[in-house]
Amino acid sequence: MKPSVNCVAFISPNKAPMIGDLLECFREKTLKEMQVQDPHFNKDQDHLVEMWFVGAGSDNMRCHGFEHEGQVYNAPFYVSESLLRGKHEGDVVNVHTEDIDYEVTLKQQGYKHQRYGLFEEVLEKVCH
Image (cartoon, rainbow, N blue to C red; front, side):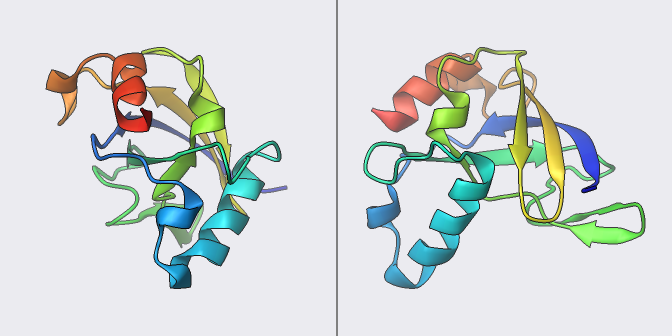
């Protein structure tokens, strides 16, 4: 059974790309990551939302990594738009990776990019 960690995440307010917008060298790896996160991911319709994860003793779980049960992990860079669609500030989503699962509270307010609005407002802005 994969380990699981609780954390908070907010959207980095950068325009959310599609798989085809990425440099070719990143496309295949990112597509595989999205398919693990969400089996319904549609590479032609779903944006890649850049998220910032906080928790497990780390203020940036993606760049700085974090230790959990003796292993060091890095949170994902992107989360599939399809996982986040219809979600609101304070909702919880499960983000799966090959190595670890994240139980993520979506919380735009109280963090670095809060001035851009509530989670659902920022999601709409970056994806459209």
